[in-house]
Image (cartoon, rainbow, N blue to C red):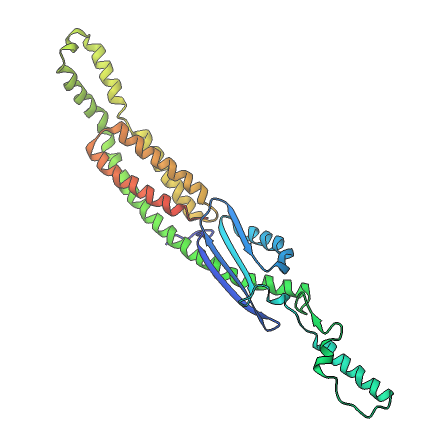
Length: 300
């Protein structure tokens, strides 16, 4: 395997992390698919809406391309932390005050306050966020997000390496076929020259045209079969493609552009050469380029 300066990331991945916040499971899931831009969709409980901007900014700084769906929930109910709950600390405080009052009044009945009475006292029922303060909750949220990002990025990197190896093998196959085309290409203009010459001499019209003019026209037509420039350009694109794979990083768009150019050169060669053996070699070359282009669509 060729070592790379930077890893190559696929845009497909999945990551999940969970932790408990005040005994309630906080779950963060990340799903990634290929996309032309860096498109991030975030679903989270309404009471965390003020965190969405920071979450999006963090993910945009971490990811370069792809559609990433982020799901954040607490247990099976995304609004679980906004449900009413007991303020037990205040309950105990009321009980202590009640005992002090009984002592002050020298009341011999020291029975505790009933639950029914305490339930009606102000502040016993809390609504809104969990007693965990907003800063602590935000800290839990971002730490869980980081935990989910680790398997998400590992999966993307692992698939990216598989794509790199697959494309390197396909590029080698293209180079092998291109080498055979390059060996045959120099003989094409002369072969075309002789073929055209034989075909033109079979037409009576050529007897009324000066031989030198016929020779010039045949030479011009034969020269169009010269595909040396296309071979050079295709080889250059292949070299650039391999260099990008070895360099790594965010290279998907540049690879996609090179695929377009490689397909263009291969098509032009087929049109200009008009040669059976070369056409036979170009078919697998174009098929491999198309397969590479499909793989590139998932490269970050």
